[in-house]
Image (cartoon, rainbow, N blue to C red; front, side, top):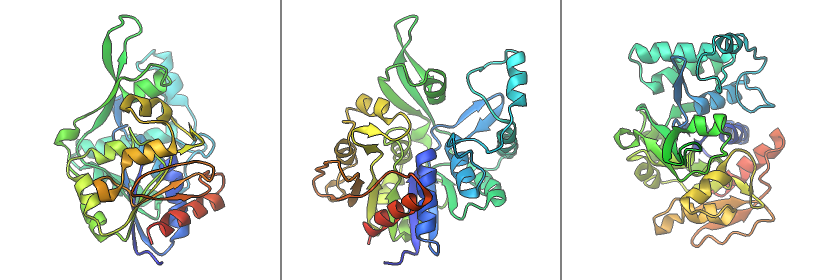
Amino acid sequence: MRFVQIVVLAGGTGGARFLRGVRAAAPEAEITAVVNTGDDVTLHGLRICPDLDTVMYTLGGGIDEERGWGRAGESWTVKEELAAYDADPTWFGLGDRDIATHLVRTRMLDAGYPLSAVTAALCTRWQPGVTVLPMSDQRVETHVVVTDPDSGRPQAVHFQEWWVRHRAALDPAAFVQVGVDAARPAPGVVEAFASADAVLLAPSNPVVSIGTVLGVPGLREALLASPARIAGVSPIVGGAVVRGMADRCLPAMGIEVSAEGVGRHYGARTDGGLLDAWLVAEDDAADVPGVDVRREPLLMSSPEATTELARAALAACG
């Protein structure tokens, strides 16, 4: 089946690499990426959008492939100077090339441009080959409820502090998307769902990436109203995460860390859930009632393997 309009819900590194495969698998299609912005944070006076930037850099050829985030050929002079001043936060480092992106974004946001317009402007440089949309123009930030190691009391910390500073070592009790209740889908998101003939859930974190996107009021409803089939790709292979911290997030939501657990969490579209089809690794067992479960090689170990995964996901939408 030839697809004309494809929508992909995505987080950071895994979502960006999957999008690269979708672009290669369907070069003539119009692809829209609806990207998580719950990881966004303001540090050193700059507005930082990690997932949007990872998608933009990856598809535009500017990503550091080894790290999976940040710019290739990066230098760290500003970070070193901030450390010399003992300027907080010392745990979050920005590369010199990356800072230029945040400077432009912050200046445009301060001038009154919405995040969707700012993202489109930044993408004119990178030419990602897909339409990159933030999930919302309104500010949404994920916070993690943890137990303070010093006082023993519950406290909420920004997701970036939990993930980068604490390396997800603090047990999460809950994830709270601050501002999500007042958010609405960014311009173009609802329209993309309405015209799609395939919708894909990238193998991104089900809680803090895909879950945050779906938490925007009206977005889930628009997704389920789409005439397209919805196929998801499991981020869990052999009972373990391929990358990231989903294994730390899922238990806090009462979700089993398995392809079946995540599939059941998303649920069958026929029963009010999301999925028409669910791709799991070849050796994984996954019984997800009402969902077309397909076993495929899921590891994005090369551009060719990633393209084949994208083809399999699209075939599940056919």
